Image (cartoon, rainbow, N blue to C red; front, side):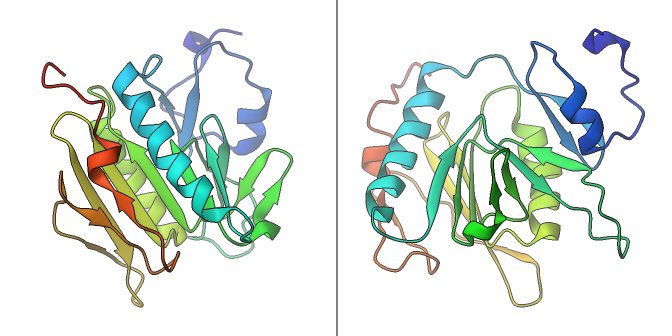
Length: 199
């Protein structure tokens, strides 16, 4: 079966997702197929490595774990009671999971504590709209969006009412802290140090 054989208007489940063996990397958001952008560019990968390294070094000896894509995060649908079918499977660039009971051999079932997405020219709409919605609905406590193009960082924090509240837009000279990881500091000068003006 080819990806082109699938009906992109149909709603798919995690069971369908597990049967696919396409070369293209896919995500399933609310049952709809989204093709991931081609292999990320150098700057995207530099940022992913810098963020994940900072988190990994901080988390040594602590219960939380950090993972990078490709790593399936399955977000069960919450609209219908007793509905066990997973309609959303995403591969965040970086995620932090503190409840290790959510981990299994295939990835994570349920909301990570922190999800980090690094924007690429082709994925901004998907990241900013579709993933924002599913991360908020599923209870991801913090959603970080990093833009290599303008060297900016936006941190969404889930309120007690279950809605995201945005930080101010951060950039060079700023440091990111999070209530989820007390004492952790992400220096944006280090995160963006390899990003050149010609990007």
